[in-house]
Amino acid sequence: MANLDGRGLLALRIASGLSAFTLLFYTFHRVDFARVSESMAEVGLFGFCLIATPQLVSLALECMGWSHVFSVLGRRVSPRALLRMRFATEAVAQTRRSA
Image (cartoon, rainbow, N blue to C red):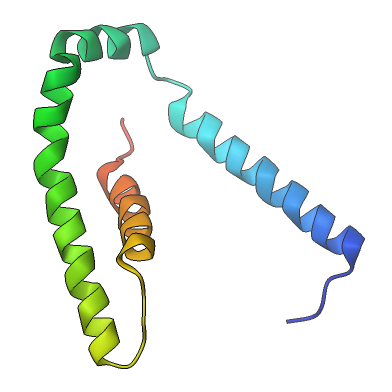
């Protein structure tokens, strides 16, 4: 890969940012935020905790296990970095295109 100078790197960052913004807009342009807000209010904070806790515990344990596997293989990867990656992949996996 060729080295980028200052202007090339800036152009790449701008293009990446615009692409991300466009994709984000495309993802959420048909969302009814009032309906989402009503649904969230019905569930409440305690309900969200009940929903999120098992998933968070599961992901944390999985990342600790993978961290141990990597260390046995001679590579140290922090569970925190793996957890960030798992959150990102779960977010992508849980989204679906609505018709």
